[in-house]
Length: 270
Ligand code: ATR
Image 1 (cartoon, rainbow, N blue to C red):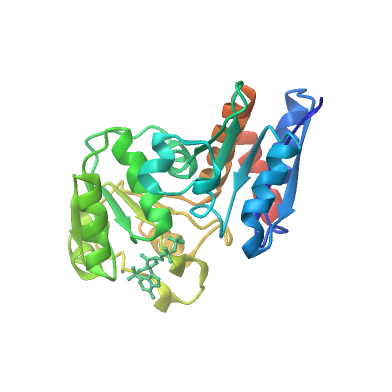
Image 2: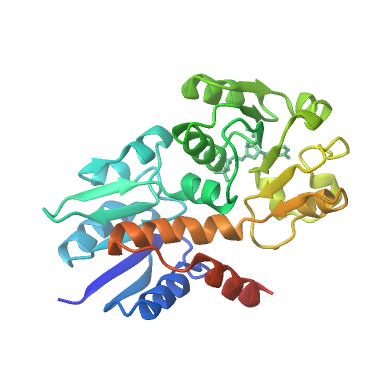
């Protein structure tokens, strides 16, 4: 039987995953397909049963189902257990459906080579920040600082990780020159006025790396501000492509071309 993969979510029509995976399958001459499936909010369990029944070999999970899908899977890998969210499901050889999370690992991969002793500042303590914080932690990066508007949420995350420190946004802004890598994970990245920066970047360290997990627009207000300081900036496209590449490798046993895909999507997003 021809293998097939899917992405489930709501909404799903704007997802880049089908284009990405179909391109990679073709490039690597793998006889399989990848389809987007729109699932109604209260139909998740039925949708998962249907995917299993129809022999889906693996699927991605996007908003709003990343947490809710967990009870319907057979097993959860450590990467998903820590975060409490699944973005990739893999059908094993003994027909079990195992949940993984490649979002945070994908983000870390998108940074390229960074050193374990580098000081990392994560701005935000929501779902996206959780994934990234757990990924850094699992890879041995212990110099983690989480800064959040609601300090309590940053503290909870730090406690969970059993490493790092929690700061207010103001504290982070005032000590910005102590961080080598600054990562913007809040929902503010998508808005376009300057007032929407979670922190000001006046005190950026020379040679810092500044990343935003948002990829549309490609240059967020946060990255635009960072660029004024002549530092290296990274947008969320790398995270999107690397999380997909990891899922692809779990399903197909081979890593696809990430650099070419980033270029392709830059042209598409414009
Ligand atoms: P996601 O899953 O995308 O991370 P989320 O879980 O709703 O979304 O988290 C949103 C993050 O953006 C949180 O860290 C939130 O801060 P609070 O915990 O204080 O709510 C942050 N955020 C949202 N709006 C913000 C704003 N106007 N200023 C600063 N931070 C903001």
